[in-house]
Every structure is written in C-alpha cells, then in structure tokens.
Image (cartoon, rainbow over all chains, first blue to last red; front, side, top):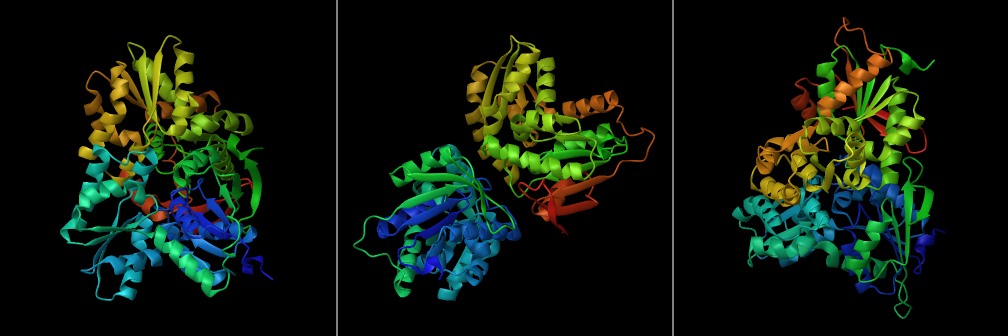
Length: 285
Length: 285
C-alpha cells in the first residue's frame, strides 16, 4: 500500500524556490492539523526563463523526492512548474496533484465582472498559455491578456518592492494591460503578492488583484475531503518540514519572516536527474 | 597521454549562461587559429545568488564535461564561478585553468591612477572578496570597494539596457561607490559590459570602466605560449563548438547577435552530479 494513501501522511508542497511559501502559509492557516513537507529547488531557481523540457524534468525530480517522504497529496506551488508540468505529474504520480493555475483562474473568473482578465507571470508561465486555457474553460467568452514580467521576481528577491525603480518597472510592464481595460489581474507567480500594494496603486482601485495562495489551499481542502484523506481535525497542529537544494540559511531567514515561525526542520538535499529524485547528500545548515 | 596536451586541441570556455560569450568573442578575435568549445550552463543560471558549495559543484561538473571534449586549457568565463571555484579547479584539473578575476584585477590596477577602485558583480562574486584579494596582491595600498548589483543581470537579460528603469537602478546601486571617489570601476560580471554606455554616463567621464574579456584573452595567449600549447598561427581559422544545458534556441539567437556569426555546432546536454559531468542525453535543437 502506498503510504500516501493514509490520512496522517503529510502534504507535499513543491516550489522552484521561496515563492511557494505564500501557498504553504495559506495551507497551514486553513488546515492546521495537516502536516506538510516543503521542497524549494533553490539551487536551480528561477524556472521562469527555462525551457518546458527542463522545467518538466526538474518538477519530476522534485515530485519523486517528495513521494519518497511519503506524501498523500502534492501541491505544485510554482506557477511555471504548474503551467509546464501539471498534466505529466497528474498522469504519472500515485497521489493527487494540485497546481496553482486552476484555482487562480477559478478565483479570477469569480471576481471579474467584465470578463476582461489580465494575467502576469514568468516567461514560461505566460508562454504556456495555461491561465488563458483554464479561464476560458470556465468562461468561454472571457478576454484574457497574458504578459510576462520577468523583472518582478528579481525586484522581490532584491527587496525592492517599493520605490521608484519598482514603480517605473510596474508602470512600463502594465501599461499595455491597462489599455485593454481589464477589471481583474491575476498575479500568476508566487513572488508577485509581495508587490501587491505597489501593483494595486499602479493599476488603480478599479482592478481586482487575484493571487492563487488562498484559492489553492481551498482546492486542497476539497480534494482531501473528497478522497477521505483529511487529517483528523481534532488532532494536534501538524508538523512542518522543509527541504531546499541550496542556501538553507537564506531560506531560513525568509521563511521565518513569511511564516511567523522559524522552520524547526530544515535540510539541504541534492536532487539527482534520472535517479528518481533520490537524495544523495543531506546536510543541516 | 592527456589529449589536452596537444597544441591542436581546443580551448574550453565555461560560463553559467550566455555572459561568457563576451570572453569567447575576445578570445576568437585575438587567437583566430584556436578552436574553442563553449559550455553555457543555461539550465542552472544564474550562479550569482547560489552558495559557494553549489557553485563549486556545478563548476566541477562543467569542467569534467569539457575535459571529456579533449580541451588543452580551461577558461572560466564566469566571475562567480571564478571567484568561488578557481582554486579547486586549478588544483584538480590536468590542464591549465584561467579565470576572469585575476586578468580584470590586473587591468584595473594598470588603469587606476588613485588606487581607489570599485568592483561591481553578483552577490557571490562580491561576497567572495576575490577581486579585492587579487587587486591588493598587485597593489597593496589600493582602496577597493565591492558592491553587489543583482538586478543588472535581469535588466540585461530583459534587454532593458537603457531607459529610466536601468538608469535609476544604476544610480541607486552606484551612489555609495561614487561617494568613495573611485577612478576605476571593474565590471565584475560578464553581463555588465552590455550596460557599459549607461554606466559610463552614471559614473561620469572621470571613472574608467574595466571589463575582463580582453584582459582574459591576453592571459590565455600568454599561458599557451609559455606552455608551448598555441595552435600554429598559420593554420586555418579554428572551429567553434557550443554546448548548453537548456534552451539552445535562445542561445543561438543571442550568440549570433553577439558573435556576428551563427553557431555552426550547438547541442543541448545534461550534466550529471557525481558522474563526472558525464553527458547523458544529447539533442540538437
């Protein structure tokens, strides 16, 4: 029997780096009894500019690693990995797989009055057309405009989430979307919520910003209920374990700030291509 | 006998991505009879924010791959990889290894009148202190100020090398250096020469910009002569082969623009940790 079929098994959360912590936070707030195992592929971040084949290979290695940790469900908390690899992961893994694109698209459709929806994300996410497809599946008459904003990730990682550089960058990127008269803007990258206050100023009060974290946590809750895999609600607070592929120190600082608690269990691991994402070296740092 | 000991063997050039093409271009102009093999680790770029251990591991895999191609000398055309991994590579490889830091430092010392020298680069390069050490070894009374400018790489990759965003970013980064009254600024990242016109405007005519490409090509020429490894000068133009770990299409476009010739031989390869940088899959794209 697959250990992933037990309600007391943890939920796996995978991201290319740190951005997925926004999804993890939403998940842990909504489902406090669930245990989680987070893997951030910080040695190979960013996935955004990489080819579909490479992103699929990296995602498969990450999924294999988390399966080895006995997870009952996998959350792909990275928009690029969801956009590029979700069908393949869903087809090949023995546990349910939830990505961030479908929940984000659903939330956007729910929020938009006019059906004119903008989507911003990495080059890979926008090139994939995944958000557009998901939105049109729910609302075929919607008008969806996708736009890659590669510099936003760098601005967030540099901590320049306000000030003139960030503002001018946002204005330059978003101008074409605003000309299309959108009423809803999907933040299709887990880094972007950190720019939300600035982006809201730039797009004005008439545009609703949507991020996928809450919607994804809701989708996970539903999936666990449907499959009778939810942890007992009366149980103790679930544990949280963290793995990264590089620079655990920096991850610890950011995670502590974002999650309001220091990761109790954090290890650095190496993912091996073609070896089932096997862990070859483990070092606490 | 190591094939790398023959004068007709190629020179290996390794970079984390595309930036090393500036070094390759200088090399092919100065030494037209030499054949070259370039490896860009585009699947794992950027190296700048990654930990020393991870950069050293990636550099070792790249070097092993190029050794497998029979190179006679290795150029580490990436500042971060040079700063983090050069001593280890020099000690362990059976061929001479030339990095970009020492030649750039030498050029800066030659150009600076006051000895007040600024160095900009990635977080990894600046954290390593490699430029400061190399400059002080040549001129112990120099005053060296290092400053990480992580956003510059993203701006170059986005093609935003002029305009207000780039200018404001440069002003914000460089202000503390200008306050130190430097007369020479080392562009300690192979992406930065593409920002040189803007940076020159921001720092003013009293500051000399130094990039390592020419100085590195000169150092390679000297090393080949000393070791009697230079290709016969009367020979035909040397061949140029290219390998990348991701997205050969984008690399082809950039290389064609930067080198004024389309790469005739370009393959995508996978580097395997712990297996001597062995190539596991090869696909032309």
